[in-house]
Amino acid sequence: MIKPYPAQYCASIACLLLSLLLAPLLFGIINRVKAKVAGRQGRPLLQLYFDINKLLRKNSVYPQTSTRFFRIAPVAGVAAALAALLMLPFGGVPAVLSFPGDFIVMPALLAFSRYMLILAALDTGSAFEGMGAARESLFSAMAEPILIFCLMVLAYASREYSLSLILGGLPATLWLAEWPMYLLLAIALFLLLLVENSRIPVDDPNTHLELTMIHEVMILDHSGPDLALLEYSASLKLWIFCLIISGIAIPQAGVWGFAERSSPAGSFPSFALEAGTMLLMILCIAALVGCVESAMARLRLERVPQVLTLAGSFACLAALSLWR
Image (tube, rainbow, N blue to C red; front, side):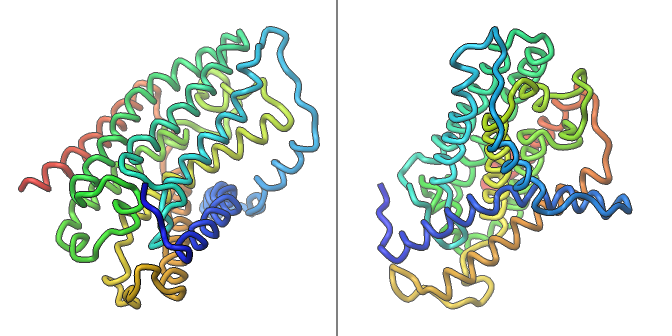
């Protein structure tokens, strides 16, 4: 296990708390961008915070056919997303939990979160939720191998086996030499972001027609604090994908002319500047998602595998670029 220095550990905790606090803001940015493009005022940026606060003050209602899996799924989803977030660096700040092979464990945690949600949907005995669970399991079976393959390509390129070194310690020289590979991987991961987070053109999170929903139909029977946990875990998952893409797009400080680290513990101005740059990139990715959703319509379900095939093709081209 990689043990950070005390100053780095404090910075890692601060970045983790910042991620937990700002994750719901991404949905507000996406909705506000879509509203501005459509010429509407739109909902407040902090609308999801208000919704979560309202849901936490209500009581949960459970279907009569449900078992303990239905009650455990929201808690397990938040716990898995939080554990995955612990393994991701924030700019030049290392992850709170870092060890060799965590780039395999992190996608497995996201898969476990989805598995529990699928179990909860099937546990209700509802035909609509079972239909959404079947769609979710099909698309996730295609998306998860692509995500793992992208991380394996990054690990091979950096010759490292920990996300803190793969994403958080990206040398400027390697980034400048292999920028086509990082660009292709960023495009592939952005397509995966749309699929994994049920965004347009894959799914419409604002629709109320059960026949066309994927993620939303699986949480129809959740209410109160359970629904609040599911909404928050969805925001954490979106934050995780934005964080991975930002880690690819932003190399180490040297390429921008920032202050180089002169000690193993680094300097506070350097960490703060890199963390601020990373935060700006995450917000820009959320705005880009809003622009994509404003410019495209929802695809038919039979077209979704083509999006995943395109993402896999970009990932394969990125791998081939390493062996040119």
